[in-house]
Length: 161
Image 1 (cartoon, rainbow, N blue to C red):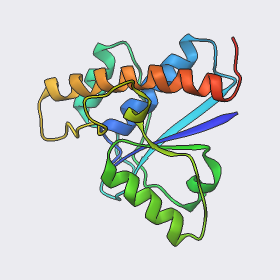
Image 2: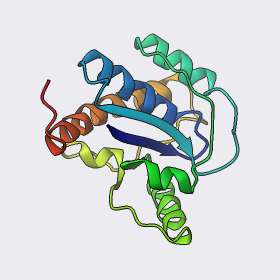
Image 3: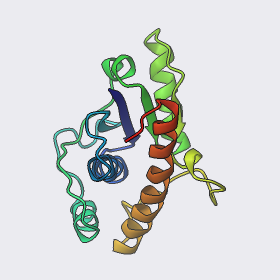
């Protein structure tokens, strides 16, 4: 089973949305036995909280269910997840610092948009201070990025369904 962890700052907007989109695509493509995902934040701002209500609404409007409570990344995550997928450079840097400070190693740390062909930028913008259009934009970015990421994973792990 390939384990994927999506990471943003507070774990109430981007990363739970990425997790939900990924899970939906995995299920829709008959890949549930091959992949497992979760999400977390690099900060402790929203531990135990539900995703932002706009995240939930955006997901629902796009036919995606979210079932998540906010949590912070930890050393166990570094050991247990095959892929650590950050939403922006700041969070990727925080993941890499945690890896080093924990005396661990991990060679599968990426920005989600690295899997998009020719992205306009590599970061997924944080929609927290924006309106619903910001959340819809993030959904669109994540939806496309995750399509490409899932194709990468299928090839990388020789999963043919």
